[in-house]
Image 1 (cartoon, helix red, strand yellow):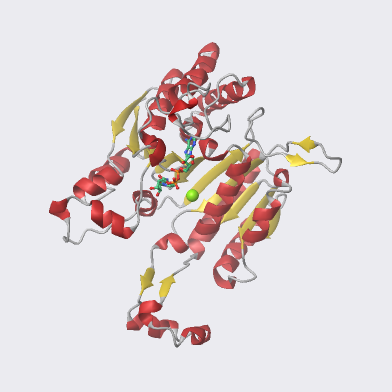
Image 2: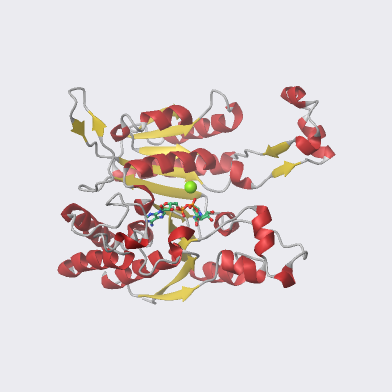
Length: 398
Ligand code: NAI
Ligand code: MG
């Protein structure tokens, strides 16, 4: 069999540190691959006016699988201010390269598992009626539609007249008729049936394959009738093939409350892009937070795996790096599952579980410290030490 090539995109800040550690782990489980580096992120924007260069897209198109660290994104005015002087006023416009990647390769499925690791001091606990505490086991997998909704990028401040006129064909626009166009901002929440039915079918298929009893559509169809309503209808349709799986429906606002009351009740959650982003951060917070939150962006041809955290610029310069590499390591394990190397993925997850359970090696977030350079001298493990602890557990098994 020819050796697989993985496109590595460290990006900015701590993305560079965590990806480096995940690659060490992949090596130890015996994943024999070539890695090619691809440029992405803020530094590329500053130097080239493009945070997602064509050469990176070409590499992904050729090799199909990517591992991504994190990027830095900044608002429009900062983006322009930091552009290389020779590129200023040449029409370069910043856009988020990870959103760009998802759209370019139609990585329409974003899968975000949020699972409790026994012994993680960051696990959600709740008070019992008698004043004690209990720690429910959370095992939720969020299916977030990754390319549409409010992230489609169809938006205006000061919309052109044709747009305004078109909107005024809707009677509800009457409420805004006296608003000056320059004081009007519009972002379109676009859902399409092919994308909704695709993710709904994938969510049920996943629930069936991995033994989850329910798929919960988490939207807001009582208010956002058309778009949320379309996702609901898609879930209903997809459910027909899997009648043994229960289909539940929650509103995003209520769901954010339920997840802090009875998170163990949920299995697979199905949402559009915006609400999927919100609800996945909510569940991630119950299972260790950003240092544990993994994700896969999956299309038919290309898939990119990444921790959901960003580049954490305030920690980027710390030497040694103090951030938790587990989210990135688990994202790499998810990549292994995706390409059929499930045993290797399991080895990694088991090793992570062992390290957490043992509790000897903990990064600053797990010790509930505030992220300062002195956390290492206070007993926190560095990014590298945490990865080494995982590696040591793997070595015992391979
Ligand atoms: P962030 O996720 O980078 O960091 C927020 C806070 O979470 C950090 O200050 C730190 O306390 C904690 N944290 C994050 N990752 C951690 C880890 N591995 N271990 C321990 N603690 C960790 O989000 P923030 O500060 O809002 O954004 C920073 C930059 O990242 C921005 O430019 C933002 O646009 C970008 N970003 C990029 C994402 C991506 O690449 N997919 C996702 C989110 C934000
Ligand atoms: Mg997010």
